Image (cartoon, rainbow over all chains, first blue to last red; front, side, top):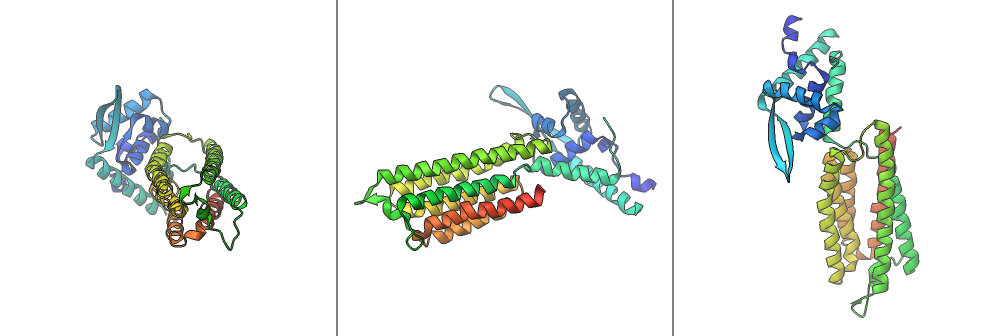
Length: 99
Length: 211
């Protein structure tokens, strides 16, 4: 059991972070408002989850201006993609192991 | 923040998030059915107004008198088409909004915007192209052209919504291409594509996703 859990990534334990990573796996990039709409979180809450994923280098951030409005987009990094795939595989193993 | 549940639940959540973040899933089959009904009504109105018959359905012969655009004909066709378009879009938005509300999704979220924008370019190009066809006196190709460009718009948009839309798009393109060789039957092909096929695919999607 221990080695099965080895790849279960702590960074993806919360539903919000898992959601952010899932969305960024299938979209080249998403902006803050799109993520907010998908996850139904408050600004502060979403920002703190994004910060944590950014610090873990699972996601990258682009800041730019659209006209005068600041627009921040997020994308999954290589590290993030790999970690997420490993996490998925570990989950699958857990499911198959329990059968 | 609540922790994630069992691995199976987690996998389901991941799949749901991947789906709903990449595609607009609230598109209602009823939108298609009503668009089809309005298109059939519009085609029927044109038949009746122009006094066409199934054996002689060539609408374009009325478009020009002595080589010049017949303005009565053009204004009737444009009014008819515009009415169908407005009715179809209104019903489309109504039923899709209803489905979105049921699913707890927003009607005009980023996935919906992405879908609409991806369809806009082929549609605008097609619209302008049809005006050019009328201008150059080849009205007979306008009906096939609307089918082809609408099909291309659906094909392009299908990346961002329910997969079935892709096959509806391909069907419209095929009908449009065939119709361009049978110019006299343009209106019939148009009714088949915009009318019957919308109803067929709308019904299919309704039973697949909304029952």
